[in-house]
Length: 64
Image (cartoon, one colour):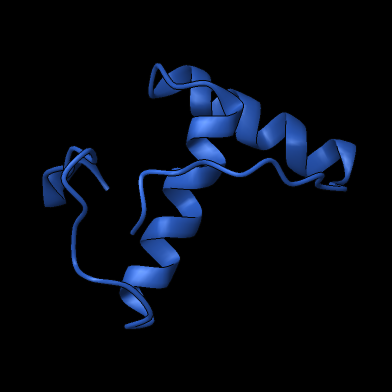
């Protein structure tokens, strides 16, 4: 993936945003970084992007 970042407005329900915020807090990430992580992981699992980018730290399978 490109290292360029693009801004994108996102409409998201308060319930989903609260859950992502709690998850991000647990993983010491910002909400933005958590959303990007989740999207990248879903894209990787769907075979839409390469397995791992150079700036993403993989998690051990036991932590998932």
